[in-house]
Length: 628
Image (cartoon, rainbow, N blue to C red; front, top):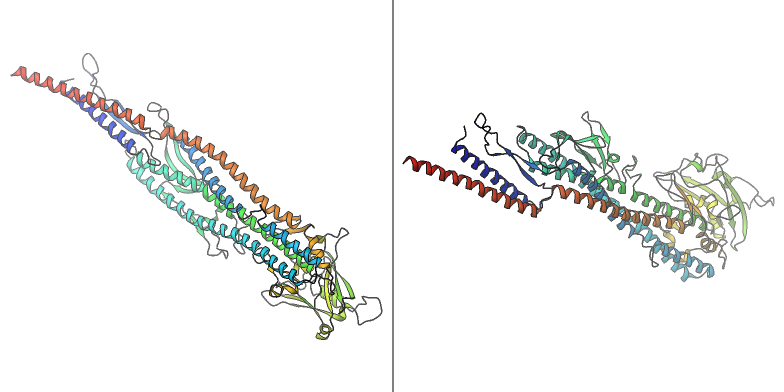
């Protein structure tokens, strides 16, 4: 039965609802600048009425149904996914912009400019083949060029190593976040176990961590079913039920438990970290290629995600591709130059350290030796050609084993001159030796004895080119083995002027035949810059047939094009991100103006409820006064 005391309770319920409204509004205002905070709203409903009274059910005041989060799971999922794309795009853009600074091929600065100066000095040497001052200048410019190539490769390698270090840091952060989310899930389950309370602040914290995880690895959250609550707010769509976070189908968080991503580099000689996912049975599954999004995905795309099982070096990735291209460019420059320089005569030619099966065929050895032929030419002290022998390389040619070997073709007794003189042929002057000592062998071609040296005999290796006289069409035997070196090294990391020429630049030879004024080699060097040769890229089957300038342009232009594409893509993704973020903020972010309006509304409600109580108090005083 309704009574004056019931009216007092109704007033109290209004006070309580208004007080909770003020508390919640204050909570919203104080967290207006808190990242990840979702605005909350007090949801009230009429308290159950007093029934079975005349003339009917009598109102019994208000009661707080819940404190609801204004949160839309669909909008948040879109925001999370776009944030992952934005994070990957931002990182890719900044990294490629840094990479592009290593190739300043404008305003006469960079490797290409150094190459122009290098070949210009070969031209100067061809004009003055016996001028030692030009040789010294050429040696200096060669060192400038090679140091710049080494420096560029080193900068790219350092950048790759920095990404490798960042990979470890970010994977550790992913595992830390996953563990924290699992513990929050347990706290949410405990807080909401009665089905009455909403763990709003815990859910906000979990969403913040989910967003961070998505930015790192592009993880996907599966959280039961999504239910709307349009009676409270049309923007509410909340997920509940089973909870897990996965990456490409691999669960990172499963309810209140988590499965860390493994990262290790102990077995990689290069120090590159590899990722794995360990199943419950202990089997480790390679995991790097499974991460496609977020900052970590961008790091793997740039650094390389697949590691070579031999040396631990990435076999893919933007930076690794640039390194491989630089190595290909340097190797092509080294081999082509050394192959041309072998045309200058000397008393001994010794190869780079290289281990080969003496009985294995040269064309399948892994060295850049091609089928064809080259000539071994002998000169006397006056520079006259004394003997010449053509050496053929085919599918069966070996180094020292068998009748088709290089050794046999040079040392076989044969009348090179057709003069029936058995004492003036190549085999009478030269010998071939191959030492197979580990870790690498050494091929040498020498004059047979010191008397021949003292008599002034020298020899040279001259590749036989095709009818177009293209420098890239010969066997590349001398270049592949480094038989008579102008350049030391095999790639962009160790390219340099040959040690003996660095020690004494006046030893640089412009001649083929050892006579004053001969400039055949220097002229060939000048011409070689315009000839197309093969540049074979490490870790791939790609071979570029281009000039040295064209090959370097391919590298520099590729970097520039990728950087420009990353900038344009970032502009697009940023515009999308801003729109999605604005949509998310419009749903869940605190609006100070709205909260101040609510504060005034709750204040007014509180005052009105208080008025009800004071009115009841006056009524009770009146009743008590009547009794007196």
